[in-house]
Length: 245
Image 1 (spheres, rainbow, N blue to C red):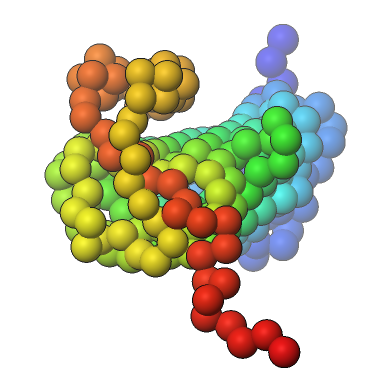
Image 2 (cartoon, rainbow, N blue to C red; image 1 turned 180 degrees about the horizontal axis):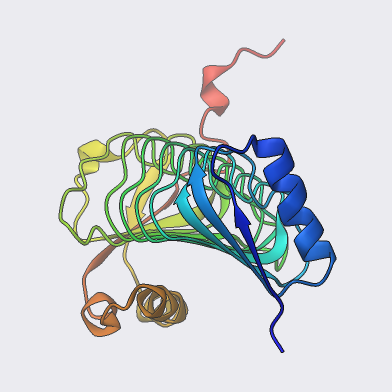
């Protein structure tokens, strides 16, 4: 039997709210439904296990920060930095999100159906088999993948509104894959475009299928679309910017 806990967050400060969420998960809840959320920060932070947390409303910054295992589903928009330094688990946002989505993310998946703000995927990183994944259904703003050190970042640009510049500024690991063509002028120092191979397509296909399944989309047009793959031009993109004694 599924153990369900419902929490009404209306008018509640984020500290007692997060204490209730944590207590519910520690007590063995399989699903936690948090209703009437309006800007409360740090929801799901540091949680372990395999519970699913449904958030109704607009969660504040640093949703699922340091999370390791659970799934957080936001039935609406989210503020800045969901998935910040996340280790494992999954965040699914049915709306859009703010700046610095997946900041320093170390593992797990963040799926955004809508758009994201500036510096999405900044300093994502990976270690051996621990490889974070960020997929954006809409568009992203400037400095996408800034200082990226590892992981996979996909932008599907379903609305055709992608106008980001400075893509991959300082990137030194990982890859950014964007549906459609990307003007060379939109790339930042340290980033370069390379062909998307058949092996690349096979590798990202399960991720695209999973994303489409979470949001009720037809995956076939996405699987067959043209993509631009952006990778580091160097492991030390700013090496020439410093003076060494």
